[in-house]
Length: 177
Image (tube, rainbow, N blue to C red):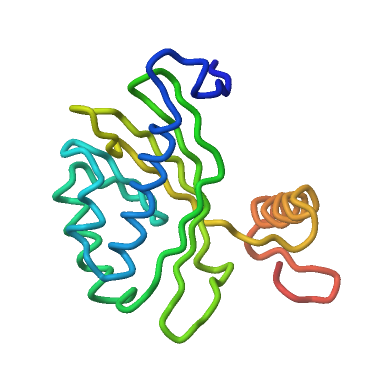
């Protein structure tokens, strides 16, 4: 179990490290906005892992670049990436954990849409005096209607009904159940 430790209380971690990581995230967002997949992945370690909203693991900077090249020349062409660091925690002097909120803004929109918003978990490592991204996991944010418990309960009831119905059985109204 780790706890949030202010950078100044970890030997070797300075305010400069926070600024470097902030600049790294800004560099990635700027490259996305320029449609530059190579620039986007330049902040990643060569052996990094990237798990996108689709749940697919892309291992290595090259696989990550190929994927983002397809996205930035296809469905996300001309889009802008808004990336905000929610929290940054130094696990030690060489490893940091960042949680981000991000959203893709399509060219025909001026503001981010909840449908394109996600939360990211970024593992950053210091290599040769430079911070790089070692791993990223993105999860799409899904706005919910009503409470999560109510939604879960209705889903369970619905599934239970589907699983307990027997073929050929009729309801009181005479319709097949």
